[in-house]
Image: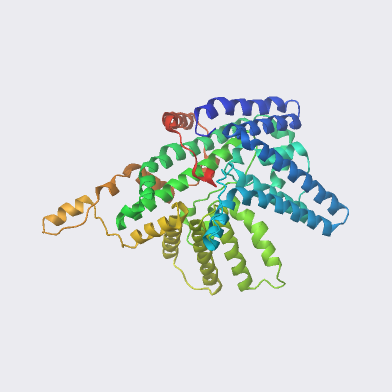
Length: 482
């Protein structure tokens, strides 16, 4: 069930939110229980075979967290550490089994020639997100930060349907407090209105902008050998627009859905393409993931050393960004994507530590350029396809000038290469996307500042109708594959 589908908007959403407030009259526990069942139903709608996997993961982690908390309360730190490591192995082992095992077997076979049969496991939707959410909870239990250990609230914290499939990644501290607050289980007009507005903006990003690039980007990456210099850069520019509006659109919808129910979850994007450094880019792109891995990878690495020198912090940041890249998927193209961002972060840190000058416009250009080159491997189906696109971007496959320039040059007896298929892209949507990326405030700021007048509601209704018109060709979100 997609957020951008008729059954979600007109059936599931009213029932889920309406039931949440209806049972809120009986108390927050009844309301939370209803929303937990609704979230599990939402997940089971995709593929009921993986519903036991989600429930089992929640049950195991709940028991493990309980043991960690009781051992810490008894002063048994060493035993608590052992139980935490056991839970970590279970969670990461489950993720590795589904997400990375075939990649490992394929490379082992290439090295040894053992002809190991691949399992061809289907990646359960949302496994990366509900796994990292629970790893963070176990880590906070071990660190003594987590205190709340109610089963219903914990199950809802993990399975909460707005974030379950593709984030944002949640922290227990904020969520548990809200789920235990009886006042938040009753409808509030401002939350419903602003949450709906944010959901609508996310829906429009997805169906009116992101999906418009599919017919141009997908065929290009299916046949990357046909790309030339100009075409490859146009394709990557379109893909960066598609990825941003697709994923930020999902995140806006998730935050908006939670806001309708009076629940605040983290924002995931804050104008990342305007960043003037790679460090700033990752502080603005997929913010919840960056913060999560900073907390459970970067900080523990730094604390391993008595004196966190510049070399230590740079090395820890580089490794953390490499983990961020690998987290996205199994394949050498993801490894290259991770390595490029890790190398960029290392250079960025060294540059800052040396206090070398960097004019902001130049920093912005270099950051966007490096992000674009790395995203080639993020989008490509393989490392070979990524290398082919990259070769085209460096002019190794020819240039293919625009038709108008070719026609003008012919008057002077010049013959220029031309490939018309490369210019059949949505020009108006592309210009709109670039203008929004460059100048529009982030969605959460826009909704926060919005005055809820009748003219605003009329404009929202028109935008909603335009989005509804496109729902007949609803497509899945790009981050569902991770």
